[in-house]
Length: 132
Image 1: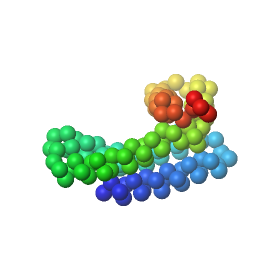
Image 2: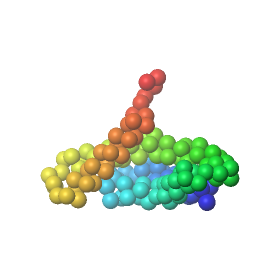
Image 3: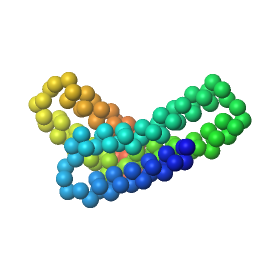
């Protein structure tokens, strides 16, 4: 199950990065972050269950499957946090939101989601250049 989810995630993310890299349009929140969340949801949910089962009902078969797939899952999620096209698109969205005077609850929540995503990506090293 995890292999199929990883393949779907990689295919979907490749399409998203290509779209972000070649599109001349400025991205908007509703076209970007919800799509990223949809791409990540299946793997995140499944891996969360696998982690829980590994913690409460650990056995040889489960441990082996977990150890085989963990590096693949980490690599897939790291790819999101280190994607320069995604980071640039989220930065554009963030800049547009900061310039907005709309201060309702939904806008604040969207702004917070973008800021948290950007912070996570910066901590993941996306902004580092050269020998930093």
